[in-house]
Image (tube, rainbow, N blue to C red; front, side):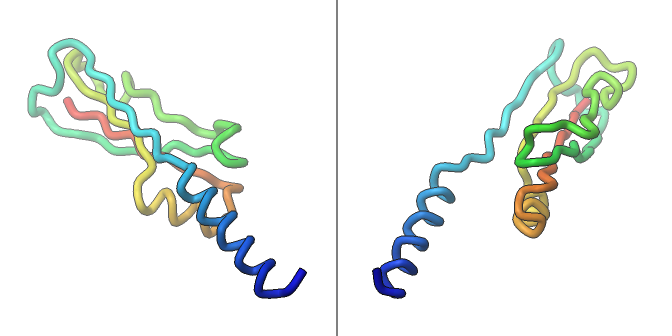
Length: 99
């Protein structure tokens, strides 16, 4: 197998993996939803491609005494950059709670 052919196959494999990944954002609304009282954002900490949680935020704590709020969890650009730099060993996500 030639070097060019191996390099081409590696490029196809990397592109395939990149296209198969997703950022899997999700949003949950509690009560009547946010009432415009502010928002709190916090990172969640995972290791080994997100398989093992190390420190995960609690939306009820972030919402404080409010019963009406929304929770939005996602991979931000910065989360993805940190994950890429650490080769997936550390994979954070971001949680935003709007009250």
